[in-house]
Image 1 (cartoon, rainbow, N blue to C red):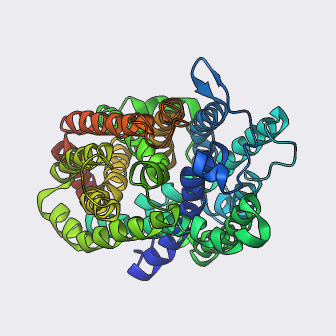
Image 2: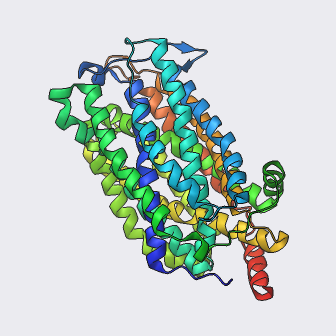
Length: 461
């Protein structure tokens, strides 16, 4: 049976799912470490150190928990991808996972911020560990099948870039919404206290996120647009075959380096704003909104230029430009520039690469998986996206250990000490170096070869 070509309306409905899960992912990326490893200023506002704050070989409890969560997440990605690729269900291969994972995903996000035992208790840390594992499992069960639909709904180069643009927009909006948590929490703080105000705010956003995730799960008929014939390749063999693809390996290595750097930056954003720039944490959202608005202005140009000059050159340029933004961040508060002005400068610098890297990497993976389909005759899109996330989530786990270990340097020194917050500067420098290395690696990606395979495969289909 010939499949329908997904209209822009269908692609936009699909993108709403990304809005939902990016809200939840953004809450964890932006708030979890900030909540459980509070600065002196947050402690003065009434926050509690719910879990042990000491270190083991320089590693903090929250750093170990989040890092292990990312490793667990990475390991489960290929497993869920394999189950999705081989699923034989009347709703399709991807939609069943999305329908059943959305509500638990939102619920566990809220539970991550519940600490019922006494302050500094190992019991709180143990509970946090359990819910962190459940969070990453739920995220994998939704996101891996969701991402596998990208090449199946975007079957042409133009449609693929358009879809990548739409989901990038909703990803940015979802992440921006997550940055609103401190602003909303501040409205309840006088009545509920520090921790409970955050919990209530996160609960509100989790409900919004779940509704958004359920939209494509119930409004898109997968059978009408995608090939739902189950793959016959087992998970391990499929994963091995995926990593045997030379161009995919090149992409993945650059992606790992990029995500380590980006995770360092995202995790540190609230700290950069409050400690390095000396601004209120409520300024995080306006600054992120500035970056988002500037980035969205770049989207039409990225969409047009990528179709004319290809994805490789633009992506490599974005890596280098992001490195510059991270370096400028590392000098925050040193130069005699007002904090708000400096924050806006960082936001504007980061906006351009954020637009490019928000759109093109997903399209690159779609290209590689499509070329592989014509080479092997098997539809293993789920495994390509899972293999990508498997790799970069391992990188994110390294980033969480690296950030939480570096961040404690100078964290509790007096604010007038020259080394106060020095660890946060080191995280931004590390992000810049890693992102630059990612760009250098990506220059080895052979885009022409991949596009030629797709073109020849479509002619012979």
